[in-house]
Amino acid sequence: MNSNNSNNISNLSAGLRNIHLSASDHHIDNEGNFSANPDINKQQQQQQQQAETETSELREFFSNPTPTDGFSLITHRSAPNGFKIAIVLSELNYNYRTIHLDFNKNDHRLPQFLQLNPNGRVPALIDHTVPNLNNVSLWESGSIIIYLVNKKCKEDNNVCPQIWSNNLIEQSQILSWLFFQTSGHAPMIGQALHFRYFHTINVPSAIDRYTDEVRRVYGVLEMALSERREALIMELDSENAESYSSGLTPLSQSRYFDSPVWLVGDRCTIADLCFVPWNYVVDRIGIDLKAEFPEVYKWTKRMMRRPAVVRALTEA
Ligand SMILES: N[C@@H](CCC(=O)N[C@@H](CS)C(=O)NCC(=O)O)C(=O)O
Image 1: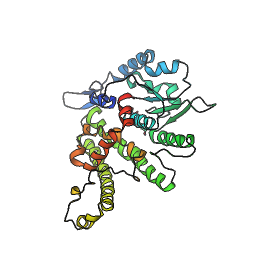
Image 2: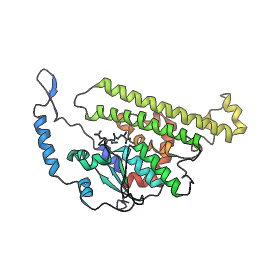
Image 3: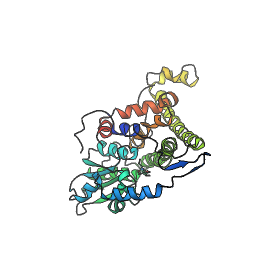
């Protein structure tokens, strides 16, 4: 595991705070018409040739003997999906090394990398611990997370880790949130970030469309967590339940108003944890979780204090 990073600043935060617009790949003429920069193809070819001769963490990883222990997590310094895997590895106490891919050096197009992940994106994970199969490669963050919790469960004689479940109904509820995160949450924030910071022309309607969709998704989470909160208060604060139900006393007055609530069951699971790295960067698209989605904010803050999450966000 990367344990030499002793400072407390999250790499994810540092990476995302450095994102900037690149203006070199488009051209606007005197009348304001947009076109691809005529030199762009030439530039790209030159960059590609140069990239092919460069070194990088990933190239070094491939040119060295394959590790025989733990996991190798291939990610990027500002990739929330990579931090999701680091969090789960860390929660499960698995040892891993991190290899940072460099998109500027075309690492994602390397044939060896495409063999690990045909989609050419991060994260990819290699499990070096499977007997007789030194390299099991995994890709798609949701699928990697499911692999890891099931592997741990098997290793512990079918006693599932706290962040997973061996109850079929609970499993399906956890998976619903995990799939919702990977298909509805992450891609919408990704697109909102893209149109806000990376797209070559300013398209306000696209920025609005994706930012609104992210807000809708947070509305779904806020509602789910608020329902858990209400149920918890009604159960634990039963002597005041009638007063809360009739609206005479606001729920915010309950001493359980800040108690932990989770998406599934009464403990933190991968259903919750998979949202953390993206919640952490959503202020970059102008969403203020604390003001707009207070339950999501409390829930995220609680998870950010978990030692395994702190380790993953600072070390991966
Ligand atoms: N569905 C994939 C998404 C992977 C993905 O898009 N990763 C981002 C980083 S968070 C990436 O590699 N982006 C590079 C690009 O878009 O070229 C997963 O969950 O693993």
